[in-house]
Image (cartoon, rainbow, N blue to C red):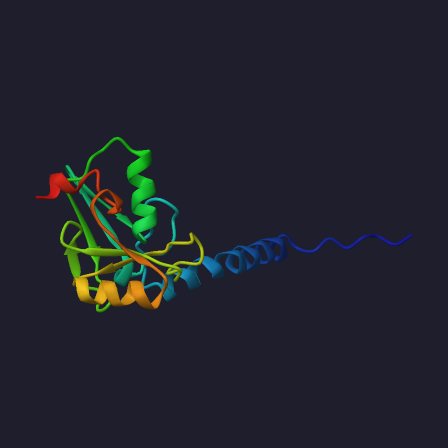
Amino acid sequence: MVCPVNPPASWWRSGLAVLVVLGMLPVIGNILRNGGSVSRCEWDGQVVRLEAAVTLELVGRNVTCCDVRCARNWLAAHSETPNRIQVRDEHGGNPIDSADAFFVRSAVVTNRINGNRWHVFGDQETALRHAQESRGRLMRGDEHPFAGVRELER
């Protein structure tokens, strides 16, 4: 009869430690790749690219969304009204008050994950040119993506 050999207790602890370290590698890699902190969209959790970010300034806090579509969804789902909405110019990423920005809705998708087709521009000429080149149109008046809160920004 053959007696089963039991490995020493230290072997089990070493094996468990190796498994824990291997399980933590993806988490550690993500932290190192992203510099330790990543800004995530308040609506869908995507990583926020600075050039497309929308910031909703509320009383006591700011809400950051990855693009216009997520910001509109967040506003529709929450009763809070922002004091100010800041968007970023598609050409250069400069921050602009949404009341001063020009928005184009076009066939060009800026975010494949959520299907965002809103484009933000700091000047009307660039917005009109984009609308003509991309089968889109400049959204004015009630079609402005933040029409319900624009009056608060002035």
